[in-house]
View 1 (cartoon, rainbow, N blue to C red):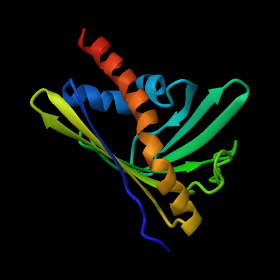
View 2 (view 1 turned 90 degrees about the horizontal axis):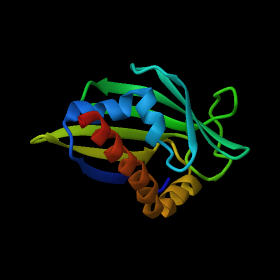
View 3 (view 1 turned 135 degrees about the vertical axis):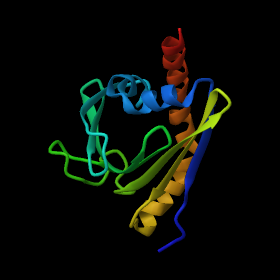
View 4 (view 1 turned 180 degrees about the vertical axis):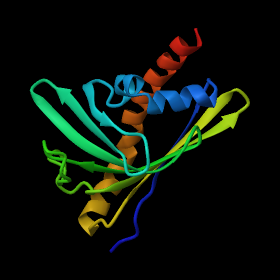
Length: 164
């Protein structure tokens, strides 16, 4: 197997860590920014190790389903989950949009105090990926910041509302 690529995105938010944590862990807020530009529906969100987050992103008549299974939660400091595409019964499948996309991504999000602001570091690493999956992930990494960046811009709006 090839060397596994690691996607890393750092972003500082102008809000205290407790508010930024809430934007990531309150399903009502999370569905506002996760999957910007589409309708996001959170079908299940069980924030505990072993708990699942079932997510649907809809545009028109199409849907993309994914399941995240929480591995580690340190309140206001760290979220770790396995992220996978699923079928309508929430069984892990290959991505219907990109068949060579890794079946499982290890996603880690850390939250660090920065004097009234919060630095968020997001990392994603393919788990048990084939060479084709690693190549697909590596090729897509340059485009991933655009999607996350659009979602983070919505988080900025949410944080402004929470601070008002």
